Length: 366
Image 1 (spheres, rainbow, N blue to C red):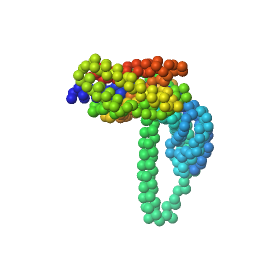
Image 2 (tube, one colour):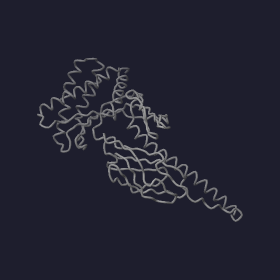
Image 3 (cartoon, rainbow, N blue to C red):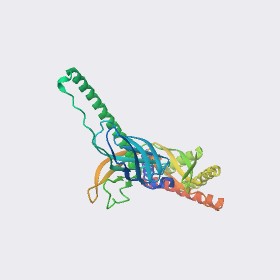
Image 4 (tube, helix red, strand yellow):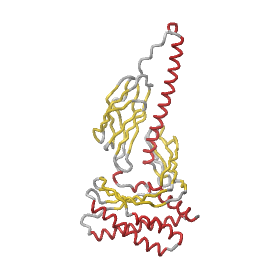
């Protein structure tokens, strides 16, 4: 039992540490940045048409949000410009607001975004006319006061909910752009208002795991186009799962090597069959599916403040992830003019090395 528990810990560690850079090239788009918004202000009760200028706006869909304001009619005019209509509610609080743009690129890591702190300002408006006390019925004042309190509580609750939703969206975007604390240093210089997110090593919570499937997704790297998705044969998946457990317990390296030598060609055959049926992609995105195994990761957000800019810690949070979602591996399809037998041999070799590394890494960690 101790060996199995340690085995599960090791596998989840290996799964969680696979870098996000293993994702296909469709996620590697131009970073989203916001340079300006024109016009940059409006009064309460007004609605204006704005143009947001920046970079990286090309995508399937764009979302624009400005704290507490109504944004409608969002249209991506080009990779550098977005048009939208901004409505300022009556009674909106005066002052600057942060402009947030989120672009849906259509890949596994679907959204990329940026923010422009203080980019839009709610300008001062007319002050409300005070109520003349002597002409107002006391009960009217009480009722209006109760209504005002209820409205105030409702507004505070609505703002709190909206803030939590926005923070959740921002955290998901920041997490996709985070850097490992062990792999890169903080940039020496920074632009005031910009953010930087650091990701700590994952903390493993051991639980019983089981390999339940291997998903094969085909895509065209040159065109950043996804193809079909299929599953590896169920019997092959069961054999890999069973062999990984039994051979690590028995410590029979020769038997393990013989099993992997069989799994590589079998998995390669499943991939080549899928490629022969695909009309839109030959490159392979391999994702094993695993039940059980959870890890928690600590993220820390820094914001550039001051002049010249310097990094200041703003907040930190914990994210829980399933290990199976962090174990992708990419394999290139056959090159132009490459003989089928040569490609099959190369793919079998790569798959055997992949399985050997997987089980070997778990063995090292036990």
